Image 1 (cartoon, rainbow, N blue to C red):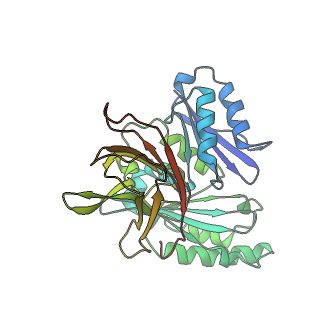
Image 2 (image 1 turned 135 degrees about the horizontal axis):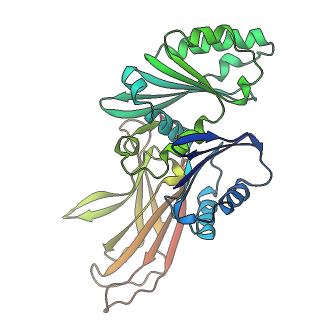
Image 3 (image 1 turned 180 degrees about the vertical axis):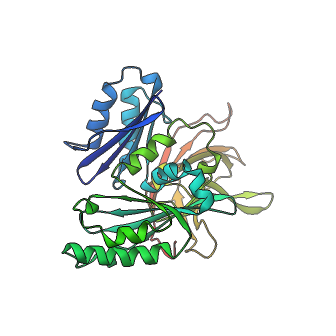
Length: 351
């Protein structure tokens, strides 16, 4: 099995793989063209596609990323498990999950500082037996810091505030913002009572650990409380035994580009299908209802219309609903009429 983790960030490629049980980091390289071109070229170096696994971590998941990944899989003959997209949160979760000894002692943290001055702190911890990932924006600390000593002092203050949240046993530093060698006094604060690692292959390494896992219940059930995750449930309202029920299509709690689902339902003659979007956690946002019109759908007697309803999130607050008429047995042949609508909403009151 060949497992390769690839991180694309600010025009650079950070890649690592597992060889003979050891993680091997490649020298960083500049990205030329689209990320799909690079992945296509890299996959071409490994003709044994049956045993090839690729994990891609993008700086930001742009619109259409799921379609690009699907086309790549089809072109390269790879399954969904063999070519996977990961968010930074997921990749760091994969890395932290391999540090079980440190997680028993406390949280595992990561400071990500870009060359553009953005500073984020990621934290993985166990709470009530469940893995949790959080992210905080500390960019304000680094604002208007140009000289090395200014950056060092500002980052020291950020570290002090971030690490006050939890007992932290291990901290990673990554990002091009750390490359200029200004880290001095803050490093001493970081290293007091904990292990610290500096390097830009953190997410690529985490992606490698996530690939091909068979027993990853703790990772799969982890709660990611950041804005890259779909924090809403999306479902269809249907009548069952005389009362209206919410039937989930998208359960939420996963990155938006992994959030999709489908179901088949029997309905009475209706002009539309009610789709409801509700917050994953009670009290964290508004509950909304949309109607997807079924204009032109053939009317049939009783509950003699079977519909396939599919949902695919195309953004953090955007979802495409596709409804297909499957008829009802031999009495009412399917027309395969398709009704589609893109739903969008504002994200309010979310973690």
